[in-house]
Image (tube, rainbow, N blue to C red):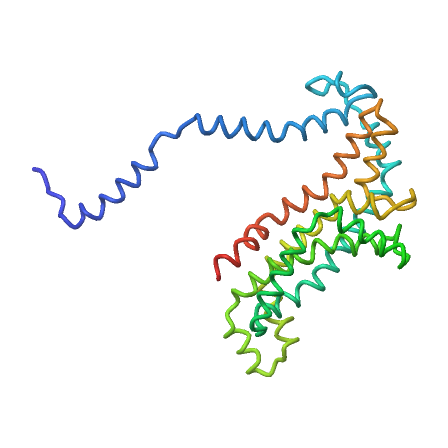
Length: 293
């Protein structure tokens, strides 16, 4: 004796059957293979850099495809001769992050929640214009100014130069994010007796954590990889970021690529570590302003 399924039950089970059929749909292996090939192509320079850094002394062209005789001699040489430059880059990058956020965060908050009238568009346009000026123009102008101010070959001078690019980007990013914070939340803090400063530190900053991390990360990456300002604003060997140290290292040790590649690997580790640790904050910080606005 067959039992008929009631119509409502059959209608409710139909979408489930379609969902299961969709889940059981065959995956296209061609897309997976293509993705693996693209990823391997993009990561091959990194693999080759690590491979050469672990090889004994010799030419990079003669390096085998797979490491056989592994040695850490290149890393010991790189740390002994370029360790000071790594520390210099770390100090400059962290200083640029701190200085950029100290300037950009309150500026972004003011532009997002204070009424500037027609001046708001002009200010934002001026900030965007600063991002379009070629770096070599800024570097040459800073060289003349630094010569008069005595800031050549100083950590503070390089921090100011790198912050010149980090501050406009941070203002643009954090303004978009802070503009999505409901004004009613800030006004409620005012009703409770908080002033502008307390509302900024107690309400706005905690809610803007993703944007702060994203801005700080991009500022750090720019300062860490800066070469133009380092080359223009330093004229002695006493102060050299790792990018400039690696540039001069190639000319001195071109016959032995192991220390050069070891230095390149060491200089890549901070950026890779920060990107891995902050990737979810970066995704939320970049898209937060667009989603909330």
